[in-house]
Image 1 (spheres, protein in one colour):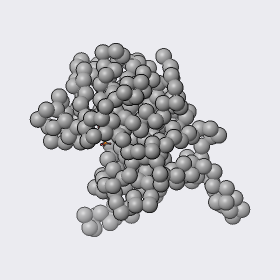
Image 2: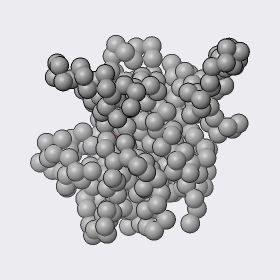
Image 3: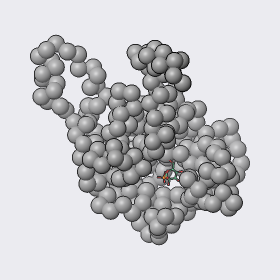
Image 4: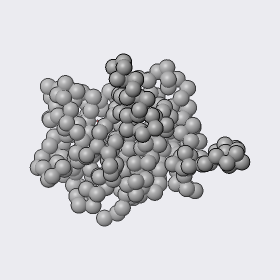
Length: 286
Ligand code: G1P
């Protein structure tokens, strides 16, 4: 079984649900406590053993790639002043660790993943949607990689949602259960609650086999007029093992204002430096 060495980060989205903050700033660069959203996803991928980060970017997203570069003037100045460089450590990449490709048009998540096909080649790969901030120890992708060692094939991260929320997710038609993993018999993108095959929803972490890329190449547009990853993945079912894994992690949907604010609160309360200030304020005001 080939190791998961590569991870795709689809980061070309416009972030319209977070306007005006995202007018000139990629949503993935917005801060949760002390670092941009993208760094959480990158840290999670590295922890899971990923060696190559593939950013699928678009116009106006160059700061995401710059963020992981060396900041020569900053580092030199900090060094001269005797300031520690440790706060910058996760934002540096090894030579060649980061590759970026462009998604020139917003044609959907499936299309974004397909744009990375030349970089993933014939290897299995992970996909991480940075909007879905996953807090777990070990991280969500590491838990999936561990499950992959047993199950092989394709694995989507999944969680139970309320019936009325199925229209916001890809939803799994579940088969046999094996611990935290459930066999996937089918999947539908954003079904009406009345038609949803279950309430087991896909969250933004995937381990996928290279054969998916050929399916994406010919994938027609689906829900919302977009080329959907879910529709192409559904075609692999029956050809390769396909499981949904419930991981031990908390998910924050940082693609909307409430989820974003909540993530800051939850992670802030877990941060030894700022938690006392937050707790004090909440005790007096909440
Ligand atoms: C995407 C996927 C969907 C998945 C969701 C998780 O949808 O298409 O299958 O359930 O991410 O966050 P989006 O939220 O980009 O509309």
